[in-house]
Length: 344
Image 1 (tube, rainbow, N blue to C red):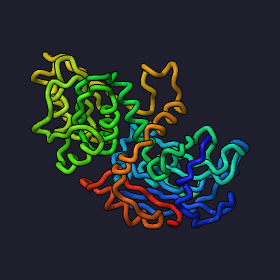
Image 2: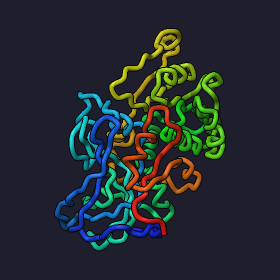
Image 3: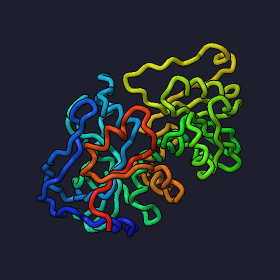
């Protein structure tokens, strides 16, 4: 496995000893979080001690957690790997951590790895729960791996193909990654639709078109909806051509969303389907497991243009003070990166 030398950009600000205390971010109450001391479990023969370099804030999902809006009926399905506590509060949550293996099986020592782990400066995880970060992907950008895996799974569920006319409604991180993947299909005509005009420049840099909702293309072969809003869903339905598929990626938490299923929805025989990263798309399930999908998603991040999807960065120690603004409703920005350690 190739070691990612970009991991050396950060110097550890804490001991690499497994017996040293760790620190984790906990969501303590609605719109309140804190850094709490953690006692690491004993490391087994196939476990790794990971020193975290970066972790990413998933604004959509973590905003629901931060605000205490995870539906009671979804408490178990919403559990993240290595989560502690319980919804609504207090809970240790998150799933975009990248770090260096300081101790573990010999073939893993020194590897830069991604793990679906909450925000924590050091943690223990089994080797088979870690995805090695290739040398072509900087450690900071690797925090996008979970989003890329979701986008990849969505395309499998959608059945995207070359030369398709594809519309993506919602220019958050997930929508942008879905559009970026679509634009790599030969001959595909891809348009991102978003209410924020500033997304136009980013869309151009990533290699696809842009339109405001009023100017959204019509007669699309395939539409992805990722705005988590009723107006966005209405735009997605309007953009779909006859017998086209609309793939819903949004997660609404406790909210209910009106869907305009009157008008031409039935006459045009539109399909409205869900996609969810928790299960591998049926078209790939006989041959793919989670490890193969995670490795594929990580390799897809080897494009410097994707650094533009990380718009905020702050030290781990400042997380309790910074997160209320980062996760505020309507807050601007895309992925927020938490930095652990001291810049070299």
